[in-house]
Length: 82
Image (cartoon, rainbow, N blue to C red; front, side, top):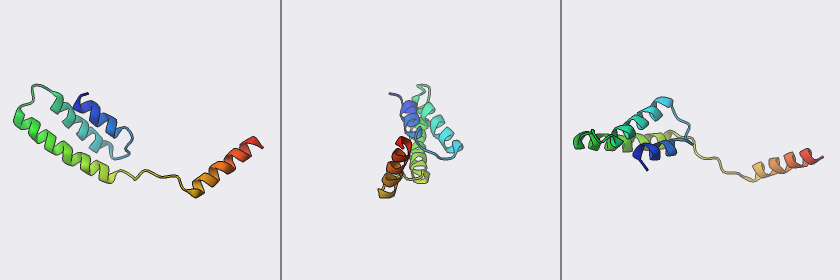
């Protein structure tokens, strides 16, 4: 698996600004490029790590189902079968 594929997979389920996603993917792409110098790769890796922390912090939290959601779901099923 490449860095690009890993970052792309992590970003697939995240709703944040497209510019942040594009920047992360570009940095990952640079890391996968064998022509990228060690110094540039080190800088890209550091920035990608910081950017991914920022993206994770901005992403809305996953919604967990609660009792109210269960009741709504049951009601919808009952109405569907009725």
